[in-house]
Length: 140
Image (cartoon, rainbow, N blue to C red; front, side, top):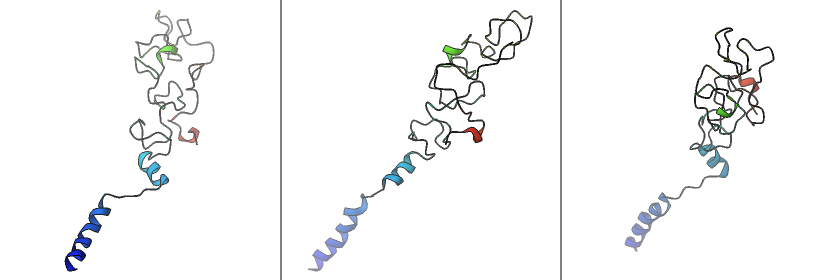
């Protein structure tokens, strides 16, 4: 009988050693630390709930809130399909445009400062919205 009791005492810890139970809330918090619904391995900023794939991304603010889902070859924070020169990071909508240099830096088809209001983003794309540079504007 003593041998059976010893065997049982040794067996019980072995049976329960690999068993761990986590609630759904614990699991979600462990795999989505910032609560933006994107798991750690897919979230480009796993500790900032304002930055995730497909997040609203205000163009030209220097913040890549949408994790670079859209192609931006020159890194100017304007996607190639909305950038009039996707391979020059000094030419993009609303860029400073020096008059008389023969270059349309702000994509308004004129050489010089814009005469109209600058668009905040690329029309038709879901990236218009709050800037991650302004936490008070961040989505809930």
